[in-house]
Amino acid sequence: MASALFDRRRINGPETSHPPLYEDELSQPSTSTASAARTSRAPTDLRPIFLKTGLITAASGSAYLETERTKLAVAVYGPRQVKNAPYSSKGRLNVECKYAPFASATRRAPLKDAESPHLSTHVAQALLPSLRLELLPKMQLDVHVTILEDDSGEHGLVSAIASTASAALASAGVEMKGLVVGVTAAMPSSSSALPLLLDPTSAEARAARAQVTLCALPALGSVSELWVSGALREGEEQGVLEALMRAGRDVHGVLVRALVEEAEAERSRSEGEGAR
Amino acid sequence: MAEVSTQTPASTSLTSALEASTFRRLHPRAYLERFAAEGIRPEGRVFDAFRATSLNAGSISTADGSALVRIGYTTVVCGIKAEIAEPDINRPNEGFLVPNVDLPALCSPRFKPGPPGDEAQVLSAQIGDFLSSAQVLPLSSLLIHPAKSAWALWVDVTCINYDGNVFDAAVLAIIAALKSCRLPAAKYDEDAGRTVCSRTESHPLRLRRTPLLATFGIFDSTHLFADPSSFEESLLHTRISIAVDERGQLCYVSQAGRGELGRTPSHDVLRLCIEKARQRRKELVSSLEGL
Image 1 (cartoon, rainbow over the protein chains, first blue to last red):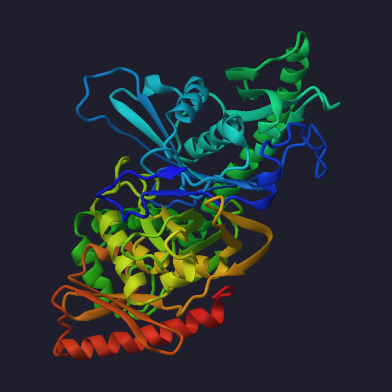
Image 2: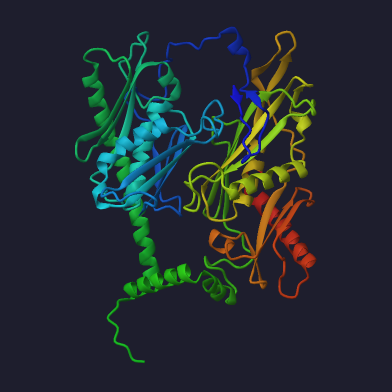
């Protein structure tokens, strides 16, 4: 039920409107909890990742990620001076994650549901250990994220944003100890025979009994964030973490390739200009 | 003046590039004047050239209609979400078309995070005016049941990269998204007091016209630039936007500024822009799919 408060800064629509109600939802009010078996890829396969840096020309660094039906853009501005704040010997990292109104199945009204401090906190926690903020006194890094289409659920988005933001920070030339990658696993409910599903879609995430998001720096072999929700069974966590670390290395390879491509394109462009 | 230079060709061009970008930063007007005097604009465009435009419709699965538009580096995404609402008491036979433009802090350093700033508010208002006065989509076509149920189309445009002329890009994205939009067949159930939609049947929107916008700017009262970039926008004293539909009819004209162009009287300047807008529409329609 979308109930819009009157916002004098936007064009307002009807006071209340609701998403369409379909005829098949009438006869079966509750969505089935049994998760349909994944058909398009293996349980431990990630969705193909398309990552490109440098698409936002005004930003210091930027990255755009597309994995099947999840699309998001990250822009990094900075390091720039912190105004109106007392001196701090360490730099600040501000992460702001916003959904576009059309990004989810139900529209997100700009005033109420679009910004997500929850996502922003998790992503900031994932990125902080990789950045050398002690080299940026009195400076701040602003990371702005816009989620254009969400088919991963909150856990999946945290991992996707962490990877993309790390690529954007690297593209901006910010000094870091290593690239951060994020991967998510969903544990299907007991009715399914599968042990775990990597990189779940939002439907798989909704039907899961537990989700685990791991953000790590594969180059250093260290973990920057681990977020678990739901109930993991005894002894499960070892297998899950190993699978996530393995998948993280694959994602790391994708990020590195994208950054190398950007650097080579930049180099051939400046060489072309020098030759003229 | 004899000078012994130990610079290699590559490093010479690097220092001259640095000098040019410093000059551009410190004296933007003089920088643009130098180019204009040679009959060209900073990125190498001629005065009436529009930047390369690309369109990708229907790529966002969570939206009922969507389009991604790039004009040069300016990138905008439009998504349409269709919801059901009760018609306004004073307009019982009409649905709703609610456009909004968002210029987030992501797209340019000139925008701060938070509620929409001036530019976004002005753009949203202009686009709202444009859609209703150009009669693009008759609101009566969104009615499901008189006074009880109608479609509310929330049309949201988000800018991903700001490099000037978001107005043109937003209008193109909205028109393309409206064309790609499909609404499920809906029936109002009087007894239960609710609207039920079909999963199997859907229909496109009944658009009355598909106007496309072309924006121009006047620099120094001497030169008419088409499709200003963000660097040029701040230096232009007049901006003219013209929308033309598929029959060549004028749907929208807006001029902000004095409108002087050398010795040409203002109304002739407008006539010139209208001709160029018609040409632009022809080029766009022939080169882009989904229009």
